[in-house]
Image (cartoon, rainbow, N blue to C red):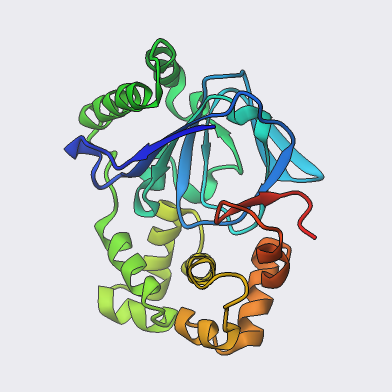
Length: 271
């Protein structure tokens, strides 16, 4: 498997794109589960004509270019679609702006031509002739930078960025409105339009990310779940386990026993 990833080089994308990646895995096949993370992704399948995701019994399939919004539940992915795949990780406060519609109106997997029209095909057209991951990422980034330069409305929401910083610190939802100078209903609407989730749901996803990162650092056999729960902002270990299970469909113990090499991707089913 070939994997390349990097931060954006072009200043136009600094507040919108967090990371770009390219994976080439010709022999891949089967299904895998992806756990929730706090970012959305533009996906470009250079090795096939479709992309799919969803629960095991409710799969959605679109064309080869799609926006996968921020999810608060597990998604089932088809590894055969990763034979030559590009991903653009979108900063959470910029999802709605880049999609050009409120983020809470984006479906589980939305074809890019529904959001951007025929311009979306340019992303695949410019990338296909490139050989090697770095060249593919350079071409994709240049095209996205052109889109941002041509549309002044494609900009991250600074207020939402500020709120996300506070959510990462595990501040209570009820106190954030006092900090930003808006009523809770007003800033919550603005947050949902930018990110796609309610602040409370998004904070739960952030805590899940932190738990998985901390647990992987400690190693599956060295995790003190009670201590980790406090560090990640949960009331106690039971709160952590219940939240983890609701958001992922499996318990922390089962997830880390599955032996996956990737933090948020694992085999299906997780036993």
